[in-house]
Length: 448
Image (cartoon, rainbow, N blue to C red; front, side, top):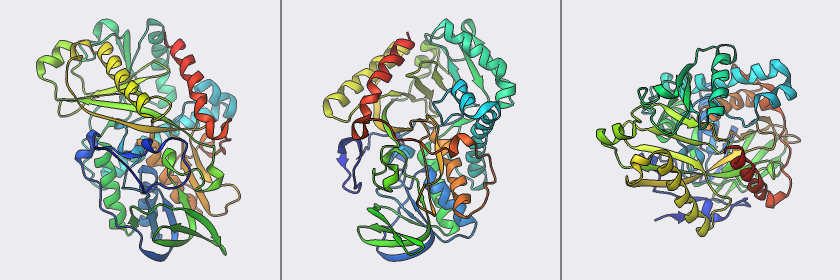
């Protein structure tokens, strides 16, 4: 049974039902680390708000550099998107296309963004290797499947550009070879970019958390920050049972943060719903009947894309965008919708039992690229958010960058201009999620 989390305080865009503990998550099989609540007043060089990939990565990198660090998580570790995603550690992080990126930042800026995508995967890879994290990794890169013949033409062009774009050779799989490649379905071909891998996001997060605490970071759960106020040259963070006074602050709450922590962030994020289901384990005969036997993480070419993969224990994970609210009626409609889409794409599995079902919030920005950098007019405060559904790698990377910025150092990794621009506020203020309806309608027409 789900329960509302009373630990999340402050104004938020969505109904309280969007912020619940969901034991239906497949990843809930792994217990999160146990962090005590903050009790009393303390000081630190850097305070980190948010205990997901971004905040935990930042705390880890800070502690490894010898910085006295306190992390404050409002609920449980990885309560938000870090514990609800599909486990795709891959390229991405922006919804802005190449043409828009080129207009904004020029050809060099676009190339710099592509290098950052690769660097983000390398950041996660390095963390896993350096700390010996058993994250249940698999999949050799990521495969995109074409939902129309026209989309396959685009994929062929992108594959031809992959050596220049990402420094790798892409594999093109034509329609008549899909089933042999273990990618059976209503697709017109596929392209695999050999960068990235799939993982269990909670096991990955647990490894980051263990490494952070071992390095000396003081991590606290059930400690929502209710106010950030100046305290001379420092900042005071108030929680229900104590305070932290810090020289620097990193805000890493992404789509799960309150709208007023800090006030600057109000209206600059647009959390959107994503739904995920996981089947019971599929038999060898069932996998063969559908023709999907590959363990590649995959997604299709729709604007409102589907993402899916065969897990190591032979369950199948399938995800897609959700609705506009967490109201019970819409939530029920979305559960029916995702099952219908799953059955249409994988008809041989339409009667297979669904054992896990959950939702999460994907964080969008108005400029369609992440923001990682200093918060204007709040000296010593930094923020990272807006990974557009690809936060496993990019959130880990953002934490690494934020840790360097909080130390007044130049990041030792790619930090593109596309991540440094201050995101504008969305129109419509607290009603801005209404912007998603026409966007979804236009995307559905484009996907036909």
